[in-house]
Image 1: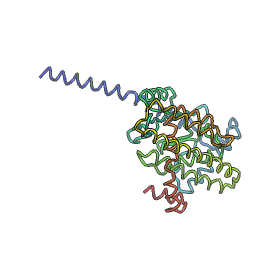
Image 2: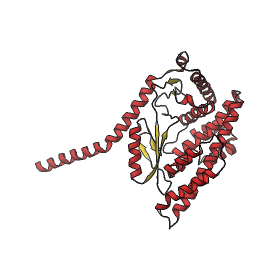
Image 3: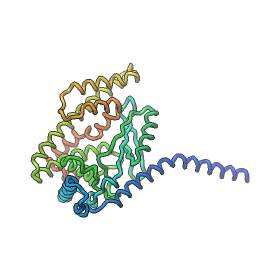
Image 4: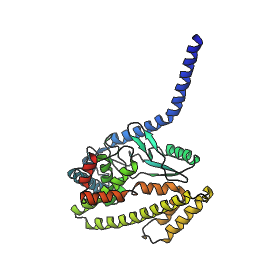
Length: 332
């Protein structure tokens, strides 16, 4: 009995050590993320106070005033605003968020990260670039196509009072307005374990609300520029959806050889570059990203618009274009 008890203790210690080793990296990740968000929240100051600061540029102040107008508009429309975007985090205290996504080399089933309470996600955010690069390398070695890039913005869904950041203020006015509305849609309606649906919903609603905001504000020039930018985005999304379908067909063929993968991507890149794009469109940068990130590039575009057609039909046919009516029903 004595030896049996000793064996049980040793087994418990061994299992405990294994669990600790397995969880250590996740605990470290959560600590880094929590610390970064808390630091930003505590270093942020009220926008009204920031507007009185002579060290802040005129362009930044214009962006902050626009943010206040967007927040007022969103609140009046019925979006859940809470304490979001009432504070400003300057360049000195802002933490850059890096977003990582991964897709198998020969399919489009996104890799999923799971977090207690929050659910599963097809992307993972990092305040630490080194941590992001390590995870990217690990997934690449496992045969995944990966994509790592800077996040334009994010929402903690009410866990923290998300601030307006210095990098947000570098965006064009209509892009800033759409970004804030996008995140506030997440804050209003968010379905657990349904990243693509959530993102498609936010894209659709934010676009419609942003256009309405610009019309109400009498910003006809911004409204025109915004419409042009959306046409470019939609054209790029259409190409990404085309590429995803074409690649899926190739992957499904019995004689498909993984060694041909890069050749397929080069064919799509040539197709992309042969098309007519705006002179302001960074087509060579996009082509390089497409070639380097592979399936992850196509899937990331699908995540932010691939299912918008169904939601658009729901908005127009069932709710006659009334975004808030649709969100109210979905929130039930």
